[in-house]
Image (cartoon, rainbow over all chains, first blue to last red; front, side, top):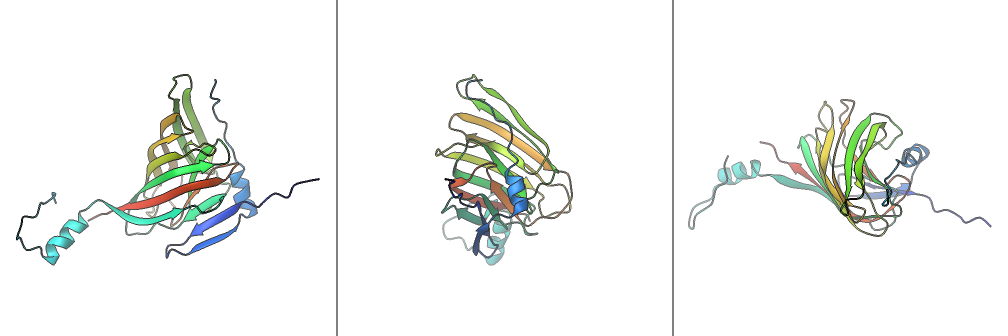
Length: 43
Length: 183
């Protein structure tokens, strides 16, 4: 049985203070997936 | 104009007040505290009012041990960002640099799962038709600290500033932006 994955949400705070929330689109998800190599605590 | 100390009984005029306000330092622009798990936060703080900005990220927690990603404008898979940040474990056993050479965002330090990390950096010239850059310091992933810097290889004028942890979500944090008042 596969678990349903919650969509990643994007929060936009407009200059007038209004807050908008929506699921991230494909291009945003592609950028979000660009993970860099990180150090190991024991290296 | 130098700092002035008013004396008891002295009359403070509108001209005096305006002059010293004009020459004051950081001015609050915007702030937002996360209220739910967030993949990306975009704020729209940049305008022609200020040329340079100070950003403070307080109490940032994430779902992965990752990088604090920062961008201006829209979040995209572009390759115009160049950055480098230092990481030094307080135990002295782990240190080095993480570099982004033509990436989609600036790296602004390490993040931790469920433990607060803090970052402070300046963004220079985001709304000016010139290259935008950032530079600052952080304490992240519990026992790491370091400095950061980065540039953007274009002269686009931006109004938006974005934050995310690539490969994860941000679960807590307050993002505050100040402008450097200019005469």
